[in-house]
Image 1 (cartoon, one colour):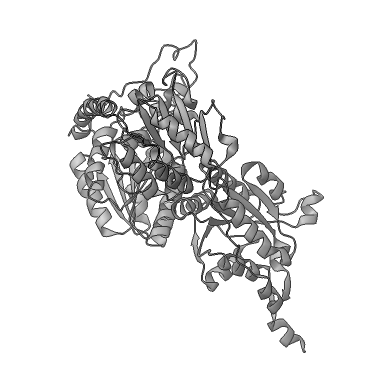
Image 2 (tube, one colour):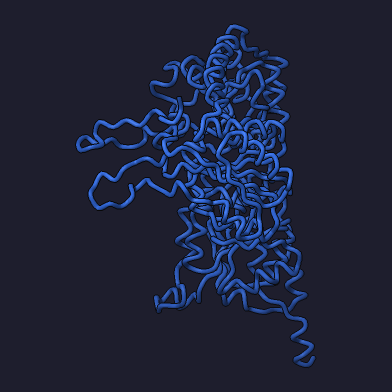
Length: 581
């Protein structure tokens, strides 16, 4: 065989990696190219993987994580070495905290130079650096290991509690070559990467007996319940038992928010009075006050459906743990209703319903107000009117007041149609999630940001325009972090640490890249512009002008801020929104 013939039957690490990903169902990849992964991205695109080139690695990672949440299959993103890799670590860790499957592929520098510390271009021991931030991290040094690495990453990302996996690809591995026929024979599809984890019948029976004896049972649905795609099983159980339920933010829509059993506006009363709580894909972390303390009934008992045994008893004693996947568990609990009937009392339902009616009436006045300059309540009240007519539009949400008030005001009607800051409460996830949702589903997305949150990833409006995605970005601009009327307590004349530009025309950014920009100053304008933007299915941005006085510090979690004991802030309280009459 001459050299020309031999060369035509060769392949390389970039092609083997592409074919291994495709053999395992990867059809999309998000990333930022550069040394040493540029040619790999082009090869992947040529072979049929849709490559979404982003403006920042963190946004690429968030897009991939969103795909993992929405599909139940790992989203994949690509970074360059060292600085690009470090930018990708944050979304990889966020995905792991959220329990979403995600695979990060990082190009890296020459191994021997990195190991010897000789100062290679962007040299960093990326494999070991990544280990604390994800479920698994490994490096591929041999071509023969590429299919194994992809299969292993798929299995680890999906099995147990889902999460992130990092695969390190040194540039020299990408460029190695071998016989193409031998390489093709190595490619395989992972077999049953996420088998069902069926709980013990004893644990289900114990939980059912506890529920059957409850006077005031309550169900809390977490984003794990949404991820599990056990929608029918969960809906059937709630409606069969009549147990009131509380969806955490990304579980909204598992049942419609206007379901009569939903407790969205009486959470406080339910926490104080529930005697047995069933946790479905929800963890007793900071968002639920760890299941203890003055906000909870001191005698409450917990049933926890959890796929990770280490989570049981993590914050407090769990009276009836069920270790298993949610779909299998809910099937067994529905079946158990035949022998252990569970029915919430009318008195319990009515107690909560009365509190809901009172709170909703009080809230309605705020959201229906036509006051200008607008505040978060009446601006988002206008958004609610539009979203109530567009159930299949995906909602992405980030900010402080913008996040908290949108979660409370805007209803969801379908599962997995809301994405937000998640377990870590991270800012800067919004446009990555919006792009991931639009690319994954092909459906319109409305991405609502506070002006501070928008600043973390605002350049992704160019990505939205470049790929002609049906994303409407809304920026609620009150001119600051939390709000825009803070004063500098010093004498240097600089803006306050919380001050941003209340006069900024963010919509011009979208126009700069060919999208449609809107500037809204009244609730009626918000409603009309949002309806028009969604219907267009084109890149749009609505800059919503709020009062600089609108908002409270840290939204609903201002209690997490340490309080100064002396100085001008010692006696300050910012718990009321001065822009809301």
